[in-house]
Image 1 (tube, rainbow, N blue to C red):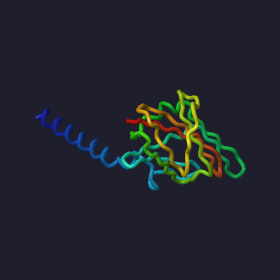
Image 2 (image 1 turned 45 degrees about the vertical axis):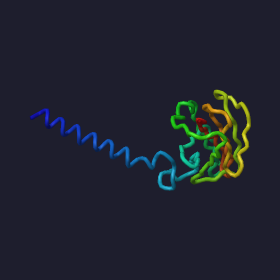
Image 3 (image 1 turned 180 degrees about the vertical axis):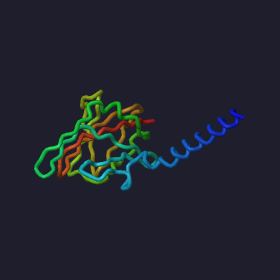
Length: 155
C-alpha cells in the first residue's frame, strides 16, 4: 500500500513540475508583462525562428541627479541561453521599458572587444562562418548606460 501511495505522490509531483515548466515558457524571453518596471531595459535577441533574453551587465543610471551603479562581474556565467542562427541571419534587438538613444556592438574574444559590428535600427547580421560568438551591446539611454551581452551559435 505504501508503494502505491508513493507512486501516486510521485506522479502528481511530476505532473505539477511539468505543468509549471510548460506554463513558464513565456518567461524565456521578456515581454511587457514580465519586464520589471523601472530604469533597467529588458532586451531580447530575436530571429525568425528563435529568441533569447540578453544579459544586462555593468550599468550606470541617473535618477533625480543621483548616480546609481550596478555591476555584474561574472556576466559570462549568466549567458546560459544561446541564440541559434543561420549564417548571415538578421538578429533583431527588442527593448522593453527603455529604448536606447544609441547602441554600439562588439564581437568579443573572451571578455575583450575583438571587433566592432554594425548595429542599425536595433539589428545586426550574424557572422558568415559557423561557430559560437559572444557580443557586447553597449546601450546609451536617456538615463544612463548599460553593457548588454549576447551569445549566438551560427549553424
